[in-house]
Image (cartoon, rainbow, N blue to C red; front, side, top):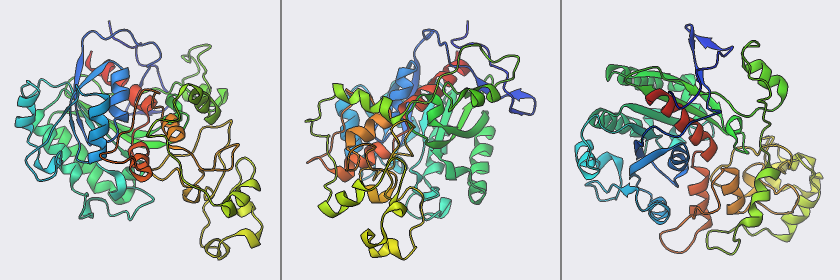
Length: 396
């Protein structure tokens, strides 16, 4: 018996094949599915996969703060060093050696999961894609390890901008190489709020399997009942299954159980002048609602036109994307919904669905910038769990 119900017939079809599988009622795993994690970061993707019943054997990660965080929270996830000067640099990690370290042979690992650092493909970055001399080649090393390890399935995730037409050659090359290795693939843009995260983060996802049919996880949460009904075929929509988006308020209510004195609970200092600006902003308002005389010169000039710049979050809606500098109100809609300050790292973490017990550990003195990167670069845990359940449905 499969671990999820049969694929629900979805209104959006491609080539006559259903694109989604229901993850509403997963059964206990038949067996432990194993994962090799690439670009593991602060652990959001692997934590979600763990919640779905998968086991991470090894992590390839070069950031020293991410490595410290993974080692502190999951010492059983083996950190792979490689042969380069920088520990965990994927460019110097050999698949055969990695397999020996986790006592597996080629073809025995169930899943390779991960996504290269996204700055090369982000809509907010320089948009150099594969031409980025710093990390534009990392997706090729992802493919190299897939070929060397040959898992039963792959999970590739990245920013929404990865699917932009300017990156079409990279996306098509990724898919073609996976097809050559025997993988059937499916890809799409998923919104984390559709999977129980209190955040409207959009991610490009590709799932590939060597046997069977890859499917994306069907959403479990919707903005309203009309969108829930519209997503499914009218004849097959499960009755009484509508669940609303989780909100900032839902997330922040969990913080009452957190130890706010812990070392990774930090926030940005705010000057009295900036606090006075915040006091004038209601829910959802941004810097454009401020009197002109209170604006910095750079905002008066009209150069900043973003709808989220120096904006206050709504309490009753999901948050905007939690980026690496979400503690800084000038970087987006990151003013606390009811208080006159930016977000704390714990608030950032809970909006990414990290659980209370997960600690963000720096290699040295705790750093707001380093912790912000660990949180903001992570895959939201709810979305990751949904992807894990979709992988289980394909593999079991």
